[in-house]
Image (cartoon, rainbow, N blue to C red; front, side, top):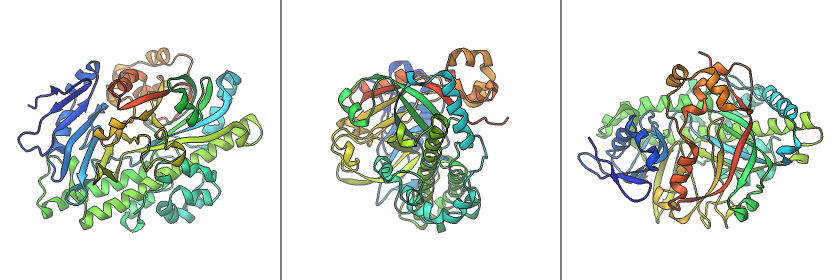
Length: 476
């Protein structure tokens, strides 16, 4: 049994012991402490600390909960020369991520009927739910390889977006190193899902900027109180899921060849510089670029839905991109002058002001970091502070679950969900289908956000409150 000891405000540590090659550090407010004792998160973090080449510490975020291999809300950095790469430490939904659009409308400009019509038209344009295929299948088949290799810039070249969009996407919407030859036929067969949301916790949300905390930074981000906002949360769909499945098996089978002792099957790993490691990175990069393109194509379809609903051109409503952040990735970065491969599973890259990887327009502030709550609770825009390097330039990606999907369906009722949602509009009428995503299944977003802002790792910029939510209904 590992001892979790206080390590400063909102911070706890498990010192390296037994087979561990790194410390574990986890960031939690006291009110969130009990939740990590009730699942396998700590065991999964200490397992990760046993892997060869790991750089101390392995980090747990305040939204942490059990996952496959590394917990969701886990960050693991590896020495770029001697370390390992793990598909399970990246996750199934590679580059599941969030983007935020601003508008020049205020929430008060739209009636409830307007909101209903907007989400109806958006839903008609953008399929949602498990297994849904795109309305753009012919174009996907024609251009899939170049989209996987070149990402959003290629999609914009094809006419789906604005040239300036790439300036506000992590890595400009394209992770280098993608190679379709590293992707299985089965994964490619699941690639016809560009411009679809999917199910689970993915969504499109119309919201209002409820409160500004940092007026100077918010102004640079183009955010103001009362403003209507649009948030999109989705990833690489079945394509990325299949890549993770394929390479988790490959890594498990290959680990023995490299004399790697795996603490768990979920943390199957191979050397970064091995044939299998390089192939996984190339396939993962394809999935990262697929997900960037997915959110970009959704944005284009959404902008057109605004025009159909409200009249005029999409530029008439601004609908400019504030930023697009990725989670569930492995990225080579420099930390304190050392090249490392950072696995972020359910965690977001967060770069402080002055960092060279920030877009030029956000050099003075650090880029916007987007942290969604549940479908019935606020979301936050934050900005990283200098101390974030201690967390390998990473913050949490959401609120984090306290109830599993199956537990939420068993323990919560439709009436409880309706009461918690209040006057928030939700697409569809089958509330039972959304019980696993009820706000009660998630941690208190305020406690999660305060964990890092109270210790100056990041600062609050804006709080967004949901007005209308589109979610895919999961069957069963």
